[in-house]
Image 1 (tube, rainbow, N blue to C red):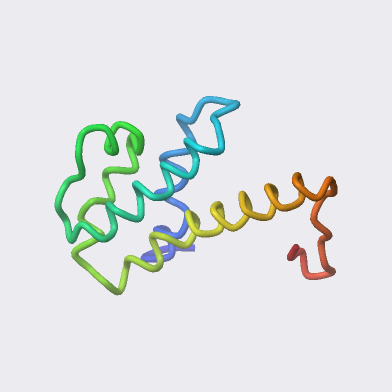
Image 2: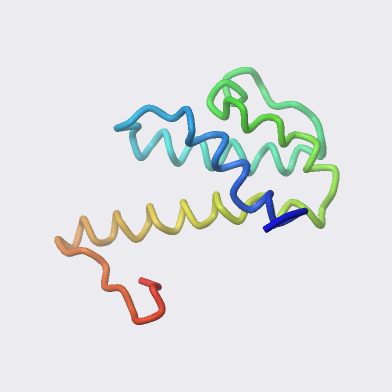
Length: 105
């Protein structure tokens, strides 16, 4: 894996590396939305509260200047969002999501 594909997980990795265990789902949702806002900021910094929430992932502020790179940078974050949604659905239904042969829920 190299080049732009490193963006797939790099931003998410920077954020989760310092994330405390047991961080709330609400905080995870806020963090995902803060990163989306960072990508839509076209290279402008966010407010201090959201940048603190993102931690080292704010290093990706410049990616927002390159529309072709935004989707790549968001890939890991959107996968996390979808996994959280599946976990919530399974939790409210009282069962774990089924995993298909290809590893997809």
